[in-house]
Image 1 (cartoon, rainbow over the protein chains, first blue to last red):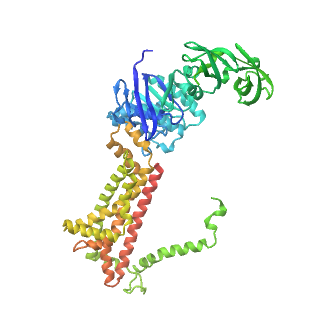
Image 2: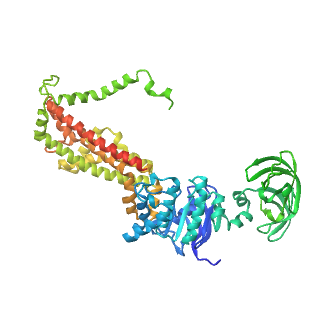
Image 3: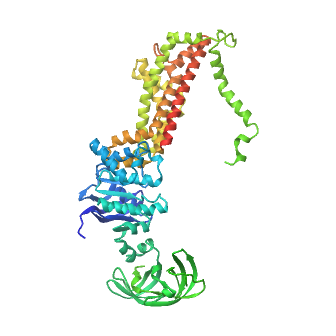
Amino acid sequence: MDRDKAVEVRGVSKSFGSYQALKSVSFDIGANEFFTMLGPSGCGKTTLLRMLAGFESPDSGAVLLNRREVTSIPPHKRRVNTVFQSYALFPHMTLEQNVAYGLENLGWERAKIRARTGEMLERVHMSAFASRKPAQLSGGQRQRVALARALAPEPEILLLDEPLSALDLKLRQAMRDELRNLQRDTGITFVFVTHDQEEALDMSDRIAVLGAGEVQQIGTPTQIYEEPVNRFVADFVGETNFLDVEVLEAQADRAVIRSALGTFEAPATKLMQKGPATLSLRPEKINLGDQAAGVITLDAKVISQNYMGGFTHYTLEAGGVTLRASRRNASRQGDLVPSGEAITIGFLPASARVLAS
Amino acid sequence: MSRQHDVKRYPGFGWLTIVFFAWLYLPLLVVVVYSFNANRIAGVWTGFSLDWYAAALKNVPLMNALKTSVTVALIATAVATSVALMAALAIIRGRNVRFRRLSETVVNLPLLLPEIVLAVASLILFSLVGIQNGMLKLILAHSAFCTPFAFLPIRARLQGMNLDFEEASADLYASRWTTFRRVTLPLIFPGVFSGAMLAFLISMDDFITSNMLASGGTTTLPVYIFSLIRSGTSPELNAIGTLMILASLILATIALLVAGRGTRNT
């Protein structure tokens, strides 16, 4: 993909006292991209976002927006807008005044401001509430107004700081689609920060997984989930089984390993060294009972099960190790296997992943 | 709180409440009642009259003292509130403020010092520097000791205000000044108003410093009232007192209304 670069982060480091929040982080974000920074709290994702907005400055390194160095440019001079986690709607202004605020500061004409404000409130279905104050709105409504306010000045980049975390589950799902559509319609680069891996996988063009102040991996949602480069990523995104294995033979992108589940060849991200390593095998890659198909099949024993409706999660014992597996409840026959019962499991070695331990 | 622990159900609660309010307000009630007494001798009721109010309003030295007090209080309030606002912004909003706690303590220290010390100190300083103008001396001294009173509510309000609002404003292309004018100031206004109100009342109420600095033509209201008492009480004092109570009630009501409006917003 030959996209223009909307954001360039170059060797950015930041410490708060003795705590190093970012350790020489570098990456690019393409124009018109829905880019997500995903990581646990304290991984540095919010600090990075605040640097793009201009609220924090790096101790070293540089930040470029649309190929222009902005490291020392204050927030009000950056063509970037933020949707805050708290929404930060001005409580003493009406919704209309909130949305118009950025346009007034940019010196737009009065008539244009009116038109744009109306258009934006229309777009988020809040026109009927234009003259209300934020305190009179529900969480979902506030969130939509915050979005309208941030998009009204036609920013080059929109920053979103965990904007869905305060909403309830149903609303959160609806907002995901709304955000995604809004990004496609406007073509504005979205930089989204979240600790929710499902949100990240669902919405993003690309995801940067951050951990311990470093970029652990950048890639499409499928790459992040299916081809994690290390234990951290495999563990943080989705659920997985980690097995201690031994690498017998290694090539650039695969390795022959010996494990409790047998000796086989599985994909690896990089050239592995012979010796101890880790195998990541996700629960849904392990097929059970009548669904057990795959190159490798084994006998296992059910230890416990959690019925989740659409799926049942099983804890199993096979080859002397404990595995988590999930089974789609396709029909009612054989869906629930009682504890203590023997069961056949199967998986494709190609869907497992060899990682450095 | 569960019903059993409701303090209203404790034995003697009603009586204690009555005693408390009587203790607090009985002296004031006496002043108000006798301000309408036709008799010159306090304690002997001979009929309703507004004569003492008329006398008070016609008392030229009293009116001059009132004018001096209000002038000093208004200027001191403006100065003290502005200084306190700037101090609060610098201490609470400044980045990397060294000695933040120390700075706050230094601003508030005059609250802990006996006023007589400050009064004597002001007197000595003014004579050392050679300030002659009585009015200027009063205004300078009042502005100084009113500042910590104005500072407290402003600081509290600023500390309670979410930083996100100011960041959102900057994010929406507002300069620092625009952010202050359109976001910070409106949101901390109840605090600023309380601070100004407090400064005004403290200045109006001040006796020790004003008495120490008083010279011809700069007698404030409390100083004048004190001089009246020394030459024997007059029912006129009751009328003045009642009018002052009324003024305080009006100010307190406005303050409550403004503060109430502020809490609803955040």
